[in-house]
Length: 338
Image (spheres, one colour):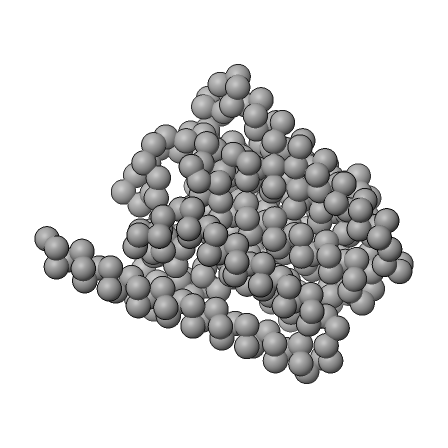
């Protein structure tokens, strides 16, 4: 369908409605005290926060986003159902804890359903690669949910970028734009309570479905001709680069990647003196720049698109090096002061 200002305004309206709905749910949980009884995060030696905080952001984000997707894009109801199922299982994990193998099996099952419904025409090698990438995306989003305002901000920028691309990209899809706007709006409503100082954390019931939706909607947009295969990577590149580089470094040292730690770049930024607020704002600037570049690149020739992705990833790698340098100086100063 051709782009129209009306389509854009409707998408904005959906985003605002989702934001209000999510904020209303989380606000209710806080006012009634249910938030503390459903799931509470207790600080430990690997945490970046110092006081117990409810982990109920997913109670607002996941239902609102899933319902918005199901209503706005009926053809995507399997995506909404899978995301909501992941939220339910993840809430059990938030409250009682589940073995890693059970969580992983559920993630794999959700990805397999997604590929069976939408990717059945792809060759086996492509399905295998996509399955690995999607399962990684589900988990990396969870790994990156550790600082005030970060995961919610990435969802707002990332899914907001998806919505814009669905309206202005090659094969424009109004339904896909509304579905993505629903998720972005839910993230915005959550940010009302999660920006520093956070009153609520996202929890696995929010971060796991958001990671799944980032992959699922990105895949659907590519398969339906809405954007090239590189677009979802660039849209969520800050999270992808931080989590992937950190994973590679830990594996190279023979460490267990699934164990909690404080070695992500965002964690080092917070711990080295920038704090939660400034770290989030720096990340928002990078997220916004990446989204704008990705949308502009949609109009470029094929070769230039991939070149731009390479330059952007190189810039993010340089930013990682800068954080490493800052971290080493911080550690030297901390050691010298003792």
